[in-house]
Length: 380
Ligand code: PHE
Image (cartoon, rainbow, N blue to C red):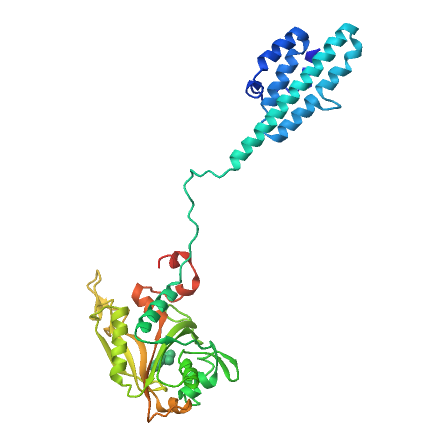
């Protein structure tokens, strides 16, 4: 009889020793041997496949096959009872109920164990090595900007922020650009409206600051600027500048030179030669350009190569690299903002952050700053 019932259980099912779940397993088998030996094989196999169920779904299927109310093995066994004698029936009934209770116990114990195994698998293993979270950092241009702002802070300059979308009046007119200056051409400047431009430099900040405040003024103007430029390795149509402005009584060219040399020594090298040469900007008079000696060729204009040397590609053989524009504030700019040029004088300078960062770190390509390639950004 037990054999026909056993046939209802898949012989390929994984099995395990139920003794770990029900410590009195051996005693149960012995008891059943005494009571109704025909059910011993059934209980042995049933308890083993319950104990061997790997997961909750498998366990549920096996529970259904064994203890399911309609087609379960125990139900089938009970259905056969009418064919037995009265005495046999008494024994079989008792034994089947016993097997049913015991299998239910094995099932419950295994279900508990599976739940615990799952919990353990999901638990946090505090002995594993930690995973380092992704930590961002300031962009290399932000680092250079902050270094410069720190430096100028130490020289008494405060930060003044002015808009990126600027009136033509501030970007050009009040900075003494003539109406026909080429920078005012749509080829060079992005126009947002007839009288509105994307600022082409951070110098319009001076105009705003001088209209708003009384001298003495010692300010720096960091920010993004735009030019309708063809993009290549050293030109972008947007980049960053920091302008500086110092307005007071008796401000002289000597103050400008001292300030620029302090800047160059801090940013480059304490003994790096610098020079100041005249150049034209409408908003300063005199206007100058500061150069530093070319770091790439150490001021020789040549670099060594396998073929015996060539012209330095960075300074193009000139031995100098331009770093900024500067000069004494033009009297017309003072007049435009209502400051009397007979009483006040001032100096101003403006530098490009990309160029400084490229020189400092040997970055050969300006487009890298905007590409956001982590392999680039992570180097700084
Ligand atoms: N604004 C000028 C430029 O963008 C730089 C500059 C600033 C020159 C201040 C002189 C004085 O090129």
